[in-house]
Length: 498
Image (cartoon, rainbow, N blue to C red; front, top):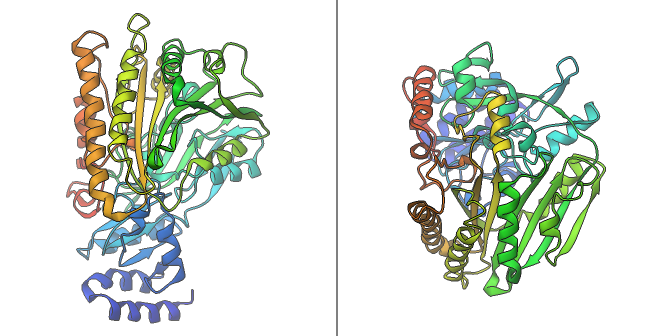
């Protein structure tokens, strides 16, 4: 947009909203940074680009869309001369209101930080946070054949928040968390300086960015290791709810005796829409043209419909999985962590967790368009071994215990039900946590460290209280070094404060 047009829109904005709120928008526009105002089409489109419509309901004073780290740094510097709150949006898939969305403040969109470059010498790719994982993988495919990024399992997931929470991938049992595959972070700090954090420069910041969310700075580029990939196998199997006991038994066995590091699953139960929906969707993946015999056999013998095949590219599978994204709905998300019960205990604890989820979902089954989901996500020992071998992270999940990280979601239609769904979400994750603790007390589960997975956590959950004290202490030390005045603590509109 020509500067003269920006100036006209800036004046118009000042007339529409109070000057104190519009001043940061005017200042940034006058410095040449692209600004979108409530009167623009781009502004309206950007607010529909959230997974949860509740986030899109929040209306920022304006949207800044920097195209470089230099422009991002300029925004941060200008924010020091204003009291305006701000939020940073990457893919917009985090449904917690205020984390990547904001009412009456500055929304910084990373959508123009959408580059992918490839370095043949060390087989790394520089990836901008404004991309989705499917777009990043597709762009990488255009630069080099047969290389993969350790990223989201649904292609439409954004990069920025995913990476700062750790990032679970279909490739994680081979290469650890997505964050374990970062070679360098380009970061804008609280004072507006641009630094690189890697294994030899700003090493503490490099380590702290792996699981600290938005506490350290704004990452404007990730340099990521890439890995060999060819044809992959995957898709979905759908089971009826009547098969739940067999499915949970197969899940326990699969995670406890992980059959193949190239295999991955997400086992998801769905219930809602007045009871019409009540079934399981299993996402399957194998890093190869087809899985060897024995990998998924215990699931395969349970009656199901199948939509699995061999995909010509990893990108194609990620793109296919986008069917699970229901645009236009409101969402909540929450998480809990359980160690896997041993073979003697069997799947009874998993059944108890499932029954609690089903009962809570039944309590809101009359909510318009409601769908409750529970996803059992394996984090076996081999996952954690690979994470530690690749430098570790703040979660520091032990490699002597098999875990399941549980994600719980409600999607629904109307804002008038926000309060009711909030209460149900609290009952859901609170009850799951109590069930795990009760079974630890009974000796049916081991008494082990159980962190929360940031990418799946509800805003009311205390992420920092659940990671190891030494991890929190280290992260806090780094935060105080890079942001001594607590700029990101005080000025961002959401996140887990450190």
